[in-house]
Amino acid sequence: MTLTARDLMEPDVKTVSPDDDVAEAFKRFARYEFSGFPVVDDDERVVGVVTESDLVDLFEPEDETLWIPIGLPPFVDTLSYQVKRPWADIDLGVDLIRNADRPISEVMSTDVATVTPDADVDDVLDLLVGGDPDINRVPVVDEEGRIVGIIARQDVIRAFRDRRLV
Image 1 (cartoon, rainbow, N blue to C red):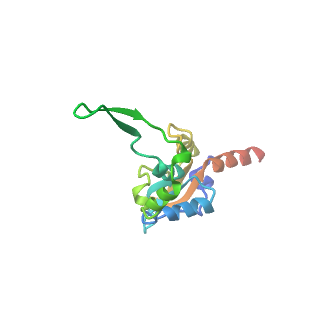
Image 2 (image 1 turned 180 degrees about the vertical axis):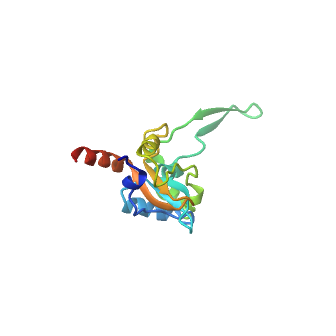
Image 3 (image 1 turned 90 degrees about the vertical axis):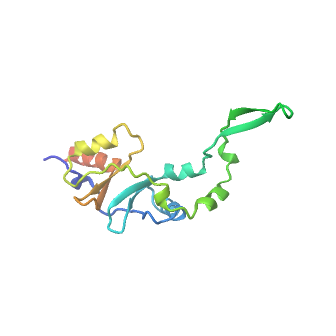
């Protein structure tokens, strides 16, 4: 008997809505030990995924170039340097306040790898160990794209371990 996504999945899925704000997502990450959540619409269709990395990106400066004017007018020129600010210099409180009301739809990834309940375990493994290191969980969706479960790496490992013990 081969394993399918249905055999591996956890049916009780913690999700967020595209309309939830960043502050709500932070609360969920604090409450649950997950590295990401599927984002579902009102019909429970998967429309994206939000990860810890997506939220951390809110605190990194987009423009790391420092422009320094040199010389005296009218002979002014500029030098540019790439600057990487250390985490200690980033004001997380200000950044959190600035981004707290942003909807998840603005920070989520919309290219989501999913499987159906009848997908073979090899399809799940291909996603979890494939070229994208950010895929830690795979949402399981029905024919209409509605979420019915989720598979984490540890679910696959646990299933193989349990099979070996039988």
